[in-house]
Length: 270
Image 1: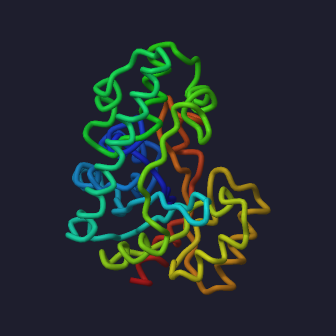
Image 2: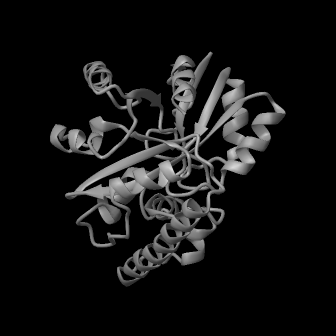
């Protein structure tokens, strides 16, 4: 009766198709998973269709990458109506901004003498939400770097020569969009924000849950965010943030098994 509520596919920056993620989760004996691709819902139809075939519950989700006062803040949305018009319009705008950003990154790399093309990058995204991780994979595939992490350290991280800022939602905008689509907004991996004041400010914006159980949280952080959720009468979620093999930290699916009762609590809150 275990779940993983934070998984990525090739629809954003994961390395496996939605179908492969679903079948892998079933093989690992999960009862339910949530596909939470960055700024897109384009992988959900494939995931849900295949989940039905093998009796694996797929919770439709999304992860919005937002920014607040210079801090990167991710907002997860669960049980969204992923055909909602407002949601689709927002994801299209975000998709277009990601495409423009990648083109600028590729141009900067070309000016540095690194010979990669836009098509090299876009071919890895299958038309989904393209980003720096796809550029990093191309750099690794073409032997400009030895590891995925090295691509960021040398070229793609904030402050590096090929870094390009892009349009992002604000946290409160993401929360409103998720609620309009009938979903439950949850603050993702608060420990990665590394600022309690920012975390508390996001909680005041109307999120309904905290991702307390997270692959990169240590035990103290997990307990801290469970207490924070309980103190603020918020739901608790958890997940591995798996991006599949070939990404930072490799495959995480199977390394976190969260109790299904968290899904039941989410359902009861709708």
